[in-house]
Image (tube, rainbow, N blue to C red; front, side):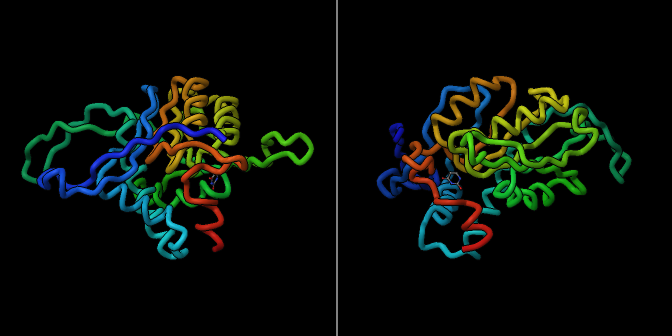
Length: 242
Ligand code: URA
């Protein structure tokens, strides 16, 4: 079982004196420029507290997970490049703005990643979404690609890869290899994730230094069954069945 030291921070609005703020566990720091952790705001910590609790029932789990997914997608979109775009307003004045440089698509790692598709659709109208199914091979115990369905022009798009839980990183690594084999440049991949293990994300960030990871939280580590700790249990089971 691997664990790293977690940090505590007083959490609450800036106008409150420190003594009136509760202390909470916040994301573990990680020294990789290509890994971006969401700001550990009181809102994010409260949302994560809801989905981590074993007392939280399915309807609330879905609701609060969707809130975090929305924050991840909104932040992820800030990592895509933009170009100048000047428009004319209805009062005849010009506004010097920007627009996204290229086309995007989502790719979910089934089944848990599919839970993040709606959050992406809510932010990006008519977005194309592909799917990848990777499962453990019974004989070798290694991750194996079982199915993929990706937009035919994926090599020309920016890809938002979706998977809520990043444990050992076996599936995400294989998913990135699939994208690279279809001609997607590494620096056009953005991986969106709710909770990651420090050892998984460290290896992933080193293996793929040009892609970017946006995660809500880097946890303490993995247990002997490769569950993230403290984690939230099995995301797919809690979102789809429990
Ligand atoms: N997948 C999950 O759903 N939870 C974990 O803790 C690890 C992988």
